[in-house]
Length: 285
Ligand code: KIV
Ligand code: NA
Image 1 (tube, rainbow, N blue to C red):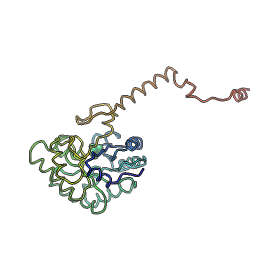
Image 2 (image 1 turned 120 degrees about the vertical axis):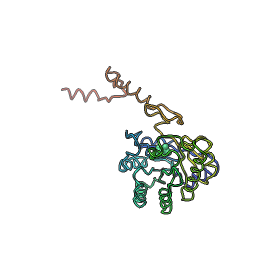
Image 3 (image 1 turned 180 degrees about the horizontal axis):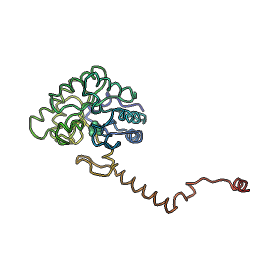
């Protein structure tokens, strides 16, 4: 089976088929996403927290992120791979950002697009212009608006966006439209009220991929660690947990430890190797 392309995603979008996207952080999680035939796989900088134990995505060193992108890209399967532009890779200048986007694309031919957090408002002309320059240079860009975690400090925390005033919804929608005009092929919209997300989706001509944005978007994305219950602790309200991998891993490890300590494992014949009696007798002489 061939890999999904942006054209394939757009064709599904035009047919009104909901688009699916999930994050992955390494070869093993990417293998799961690829085997499930998810439309898109996001190497999200959320891996800073879920896989690397940083407190915030802003701490993530670019070198460490690239190492993860490469391991994700080695997993075979059809899902279209999108790689985040981490905090600090494009803020200092457009040329620095373009060089870093090229770096990401060069990690693997499987990386089909970068993703850039933009906003919160139309006055973020720096990033809008940056995105336009990437698109002009043939680097596909998925935008990300609404709650943009890299800008959580500027936004005053991890809060729902577009719920405080009519003006805020207008701003979000205009930002989405400007990103479409800049050449973005899709946009993530994060933590926006359902009705506002649907309104934006109806007023742009590119797919909207929602997270915490309700069912009115063109598609959905979730963080794999959250949706599979890979870790202890709370997940955001909008996440539906489709698994309990963390729990199941702890239980399995506890059982392994108990069985080694009580010499139950590896006693079974299927877990050990045998030697022919004749060879052993020869050895013992
Ligand atoms: O880094 C990430 O996982 C993301 C998604 C939540 C969209 O940006
Ligand atoms: Na991200």
